[in-house]
Each structure stands twice: as C-alpha cells, then as structure tokens.
Length: 104
Image 1 (tube, rainbow, N blue to C red):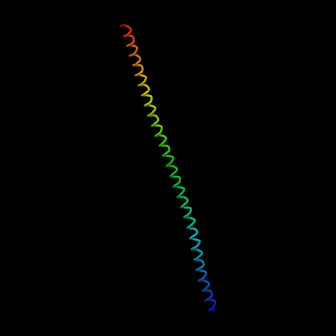
Image 2: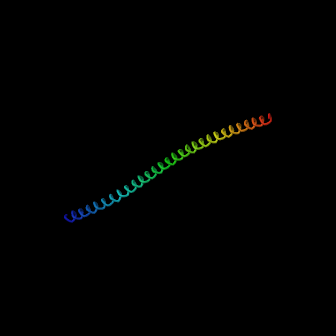
Image 3: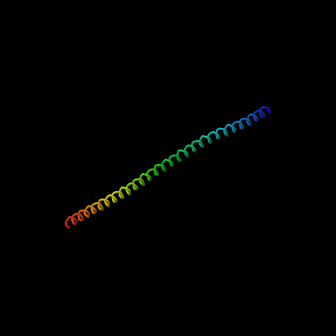
C-alpha cells in the first residue's frame, strides 16, 4: 500500500507541476495576446490622433491661405482704385492744361 501512496504522491506532484507549467504557458500566451491587442489599440489610437491633428492643421492652413488671399485681393483692389484715381486726375489735369494752352 505504501507503494501506491508513494506512486500516487509522485503522480500528484508531477500532475501539479505539469498543471502549473501548462497554466503558466497559457497565462503567458493570454498576456501576450492581450498586450498585442493593447499595443494594436494604442497604435490605432495614436494613428487616429495623428490623422485628426493633420486634418486640423490642414483646415488651419486652408483658413490661413484664404485670409492671405483676401488680404492680397483687397490690396490689389485698393491699388487698382488708386491707379484709376491718379489716372483720372492726370487726364483731368492734362485736359485743363490743354484747354488753357489753347486759350492763350
């Protein structure tokens, strides 16, 4: 009977060690898979953040371009109006001088 107990005891120890090792391996695999999913989620999250930042920057650049274009268009319009005014004044002065020259 003592042989059975000692065989049973030895089997129990081997079963415990084998179960412990199998559990440790299963736990390691599960941890690895979870970490991979967490890492993937983190990478996807960071990619989304970067995409949102790029979209915001793109929108900001579009707004900046539009404001710059508006400023240039306004300046061009002002210069054009000033040139027209100077040209009109020049034409009036020339006409006045021509008329005065013909009167004398």
